[in-house]
Length: 131
Image (cartoon, rainbow, N blue to C red; front, side, top):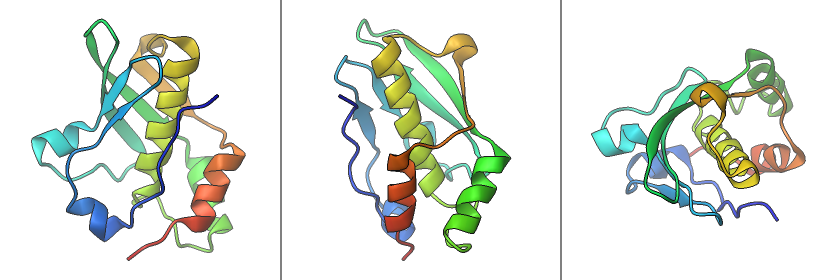
């Protein structure tokens, strides 16, 4: 069973929300450093998350979405979801959560590269709303 991910939040609402902490079933916590620091969210397809394992060790994990995937979703959504859209934060966070849950460990070299989307990503893209 995959970790449960909640419905997407429109960009304008997400900008004003509280900090998000995603906790996987096996006890890993994933935080968004830009929310903790009060800085703007990344918009370049490269996202760095703070991940804490069940024993309390923290690491910064980089998640990168390939340009090919970004272009595919931009075409799929007829330009509604571009590289600077918060959809990619949700997508990268979800893939990271799945990785640490399935592997019970951090990604090698503290980096996760997403070069393929799954059906859940595509369904989320279809439903993603921009305020």
